[in-house]
Length: 316
Image (cartoon, rainbow, N blue to C red; front, side, top):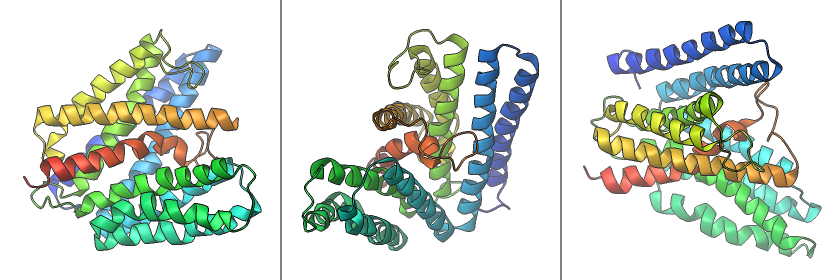
């Protein structure tokens, strides 16, 4: 991304305008809404928008810094997310070698593969080699207590926090030289659509939500919010089709799949939190949890998006 490009300035101004609109809306609602429930909803909206001011600045700044800056930023995101996941799940002393491998070998090497564009090893490093080595390192310590669950938790943490997230900077390696914003546009499309769906589902759910989807996992998620949010975000995706090699109707379909999978990913992460008895993954983002609380849907939608772009549009 280049600041001197009119397309870049247009996208940044649109993103800033949308965030500014919701910032002002939150302030107005906080002033006008008096009920306790309404105040809680307004505070939640303000916290979401405040978090996305910061995250939008970080992502756009990374993209404007180039491929290496983007890889470093998302590598740090993966590290923080992995730390949150491991901190929230029980481990034993016999897991320390496996955790060292996850944090200080698998994670940096995965992003090194992103940097050099070694596609084949990038795809299999974690789901094949790391999955074999992690239990090997744990089992030689001779601790069999809760062994299967402990191993699976570490493997799952590595998949969600590192493998899934690393597909975002890997988008910059795909062969799309003629896009208006280059491959940075692919990243912006993914982030805006997926995270926009989260916000729009929240708004639609508060406006007309009646029928809960999974009340024990996420009581605030309703069918009305899900349908309204997904359709709205898919229309947003169609409007942003020019960031990708997609036609408008193709961008609509891709966006719909991303939103649906992101929603299911959010439920999966909510199920893990409920099983662990925690409300948020962390406290890094003031008033709104940790890194994983903000990127849970993005984690699950990104691999699908990467492979759609690679296999369906990579030769176009």
